Structure formats: C-alpha cells, structure tokens
Image (tube, rainbow, N blue to C red):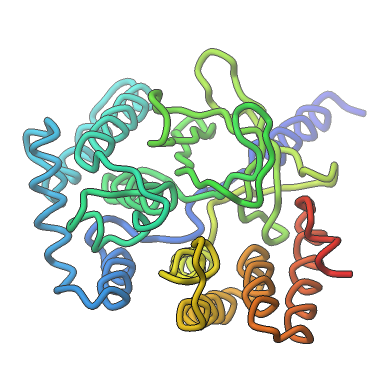
Length: 328
C-alpha cells in the first residue's frame, strides 16, 4: 500500500478510536431555554416557585464559593473570550474544569441520592446528586463555549459494575481528547472503567482508555468488543427521561424506600412510565418499571418491560446482573 494511503488509513483509525466530532449530543448551556426546561420540570414536580429562583440562588452560591463574578452569562462569556485569546487553549480548558469542579462541590455541599436530582432541592436544601451535578457542570461548560455532554457510568474507577448507577460530565478538549469531570470525588477528573454514551450507531456501553497522568481519555472501545465510533454525550431524550427515572425510583413510599405504599408505588409507576415514553431506549427505566409493575401484581406487563430492557441492554453491548433472570 502506498505510504500516502497508509497515513490516511492510520488517521481514519485514530478518529474512530477517539470518537471524532463533537461530544455534545444535547445542547443545554446554563441559562438557555433547554437548561431552564430542566429546572422548570424539577420545580413543577415539587410544586415549588419559579425557576428563576434557582438561577438567583446558584449565582449567589457560586460567589460564596469563591467565584468573584459568579456563574453569570456575562462571566461565562468572558471565560470564552479569555480561552480564545489564550496561547494554551487546552491548559485553559483544564484549569477552568478544575475551577468548576471545586466551585460546585463548595456551592452545593450536601449529597443526597433521595432528593438531589431536583434543582428545587438544590435551592431548598443545598443538595445534589451525580446526574444533576453533571447536567449543571456540562451546562456551565457549554455556556463558556466548551464542548461537553453527560454520560452514565456502569463500571466505576475500581471496575465495580452497576446498572448505570452513576453519571459524569464528559468534556471534549480542543486536542480532541475527553475528560470525565466528576463532582463526587475529591479530584476533578475520574477514570471510570465503563460509560453509557451516544455513538454513531446509537447508544453504546463503552470502555474508555485513559492516560495515567493527565486522566484524559485516549479512546473508547465497545464493552462487548464490537466497533464503536463518534462517541458523544447522551441526547436530550435520554436526559429528560433520566430525570423522570430518578423521580420514579425515589418517590416517597415508592420502589426504593423501606416501607412501600400503594400511593408511593403509583407515583413510581407514573414517573417511570413518563421516563420510558420520553426515551423508550432507556434500558434502566424499562427495567425498573418492570420491578414496580411486579410489586403491583401486574405480572404480564412486568415481564414485557423486563424483556424490552433485556433487548436494549444486549443491543447496546452490556448486560447487567439479574436482568436476564428477570426477563425469563
């Protein structure tokens, strides 16, 4: 093969491994209409006040956390201007990511799986959880002109598997490599071993490969050994679905509490049905809806949900423990 063709082949292979293009499959810059919709849905679910309360609170909290100008559009646009003028754009992006990680952890100090997925509870209780904080961090990056999205985590830094039990912000640097920004840990950049993302072929369970020093993601491979390309963050359908998933999972008296009530299970069912309506390919929402229906005695539909979930897990390249048994 001529040398020129060899070089072209190598470049094409590298682009496939790195997941060429943008990481942003869903656009929701902080204070945009799309981001405000996330906040509005949260406030509607809790019967709280107008979402502008969240912005006032967040911008004051960010100042209290040490950001002189706060999280305002003016400040974020200035960050974008500084990045464009910088001679070391990647270094500027990494430094800003570290600042955002530190600010969010300080501004929203409490961690709550039960309530921290609602922006209303961020204001009321100073609470966050992995999915909400990843949306917030990614929204801030996007407003500052940076390329970012959100991914679920199915295998943590120690290689312990879960059923999409965590979430991170993916930041694509100007060098084409990604960082997994995770406000759960003491350090800004995580090295989770398994992510659930969008790709050129739809949703995929993937395994990132990291640089051991910089923690930058050097490439991705499919969890089942198949090909994968154009890795991106999750799309808007999935993100909206996942908020409703948490509302269903954590409903008072619902599936995830010790003392379940018929009313609580009905709330779990309501939100999980909304979750699968918004994104039928959200495998976790389908699977957990099956659990709720089973608890309610709706065995026929429960089995259908389990089998639907099984199909999507297998299609996307990873089958969590117990899903196959539930679908039998």
